[in-house]
Length: 247
Length: 327
Ligand SMILES: Cc1cc2nc3c(=O)[nH]c(=O)nc-3n(C[C@H](O)[C@H](O)[C@H](O)COP(=O)(O)OP(=O)(O)OC[C@H]3O[C@@H](n4cnc5c(N)ncnc54)[C@H](O)[C@@H]3O)c2cc1C
Ligand SMILES: Cc1cc2nc3c(=O)[nH]c(=O)nc-3n(C[C@H](O)[C@H](O)[C@H](O)COP(=O)(O)O)c2cc1C
Ligand code: FES
Image (tube, rainbow over all chains, first blue to last red; front, side, top):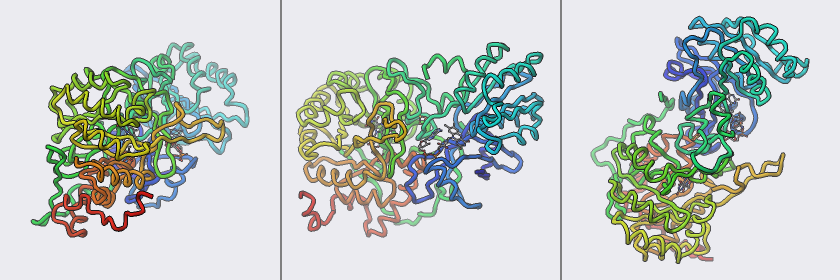
């Protein structure tokens, strides 16, 4: 499902990898009690709009689907720390699975604006569930690898083989991923092979999205310092940091 | 952070007649501009870009412990019907970290600052109270009630003797007014309320979250990392309202109502049941501007209820219809 929000402030200031909190309860309603974090799939600064893609999973997204064009939806954002692209990066590899791809697409948008190259991998169970293929092409991605479980192309061994074959010669300088533990491990292998730093966008159940409720701490840790908060310290993390926090 | 709230309800709605109802209330020595304040743990300086803190009757901090704490493992949140469960477990920067960081940001808000304090054993309450006693704060809110703690919280809040011991212990050490936030899962809230009053509390907060559980059908385990959590939100409103009614009937000090409040009408119900002020928690997650919207709605509601001063509502429940309450 897609949702286009007229939100000029968000469209003007959102950075790739940031998110918004959408309240699916209408004014005067108290359920669902918690707003839902949602990535910005694309933004149009000129039109002052942002687009969100969501899958209907449970009560929250079921309620989101009931909103009609023209209705107001309570939105807070942009929130969190997005991806960081160092100035000397020329090519970025984006590796997303399912709806997780929505956290990566604005990177491609920004790459196009800033003259950087995008290599995109979008993975899903079947071709109908693939997200972002046309979007990536439209926003200048040099290569789009659309891989699925159905035809076996999403299997890590197959994917690694095709990625290394095509990009070993001119590897990306940065790898960004979202949506799958399996792909995160795959990215780790590529990150070591190409000596390219890696960042991963992480999900957590959230209540405030701003950093004060402490509901979204990432780790299993209950001693010493609190684990990083996904909403405020993330959702994008350098892989090194996350690996150290037993998340 | 750049933030935007896209919503039809602007702050500057028209309620500007000369004879606006007086929303101020008095809690002990504190005069609040209106009866609305946040509930501990459901508010923070991070909200400053979204709501004008100076419009709140007071702000309440997340519970502070004397020493740094990490809190509980993930998942810490689960949505439920009519509210939510949390097992955050009170992570804390410790009194030193709090004093040099968060406290200053709360103080910059331009309204009274109430500091919630906690501990796992009595001596930890004394430690954090002494650490913060010289700061410019309006009151301590003693959290004897958080059901998430590994040991102390629940035990202290469920025993009149232990509540009395901790409150009088803190009272001996510091001059800051003491609010005591009671735990809801007790057999007699009146008894604990009286014990807190007799030990020197200036006000009571009634109440904290209810202990609850939710289960993931797929693996038959709790949806929360720690098992049980605190249940909060609209579902607990009737339960909290009854506790406020009973506690207010048992004491002469002011009672601050808390539990499931999300509208001005809810505030009026709590005040009629005996509350002098209220705290709003979960509803701020649903809509971060809830408290401001509620305050905006209180004036017109007072007019509709025919009161010039909102404090005229306090404890005015028609008790002919409450005979069933003690059944
Ligand atoms: C930073 C971030 C960005 C996200 N971006 C998108 C997006 O672009 N599109 C999209 O469809 N979804 C996105 N999600 C997940 C989304 O917030 C919903 O929680 C998820 O779609 C579940 O749907 P629901 O609310 O209907 O499920 P419900 O069953 O109603 O959810 C119950 C509770 O569990 C939480 N929850 C359930 N699944 C997840 C999950 N995977 N991640 C976090 N919390 C969860 C919900 O937020 C809610 O509090 C994102 C999550 C995060 C943290
Ligand atoms: C995420 C979360 C964190 C909380 N943290 C605290 C806390 O640190 N100290 C405390 O006394 N109460 C804490 N509470 C309880 C609230 O202050 C309040 O008593 C409870 O949520 C009931 O009010 P509500 O229904 O309006 O949310 C917390 C509640 C939630 C949901
Ligand atoms: S969601 Fe509240 S701190 Fe992250």
